[in-house]
Image 1 (tube, rainbow, N blue to C red):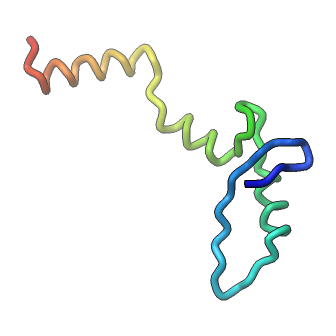
Image 2 (tube, rainbow, N blue to C red):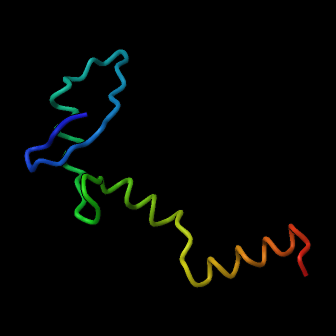
Length: 74
């Protein structure tokens, strides 16, 4: 967990293998992916969230139909 120059608090896992990257360099790179859509968010996480989230209108209809079929409520 680290605080960026603009006071965002981010959590990052930095793998260390054969190429021992400088921790500060890694944290500087991670902080470049900052996103303003949510507090303390990164662009990559926001994009994934947008792609996997179910929209309210068609999503609720699809989930309702799925439950009716699976629970045999019709």
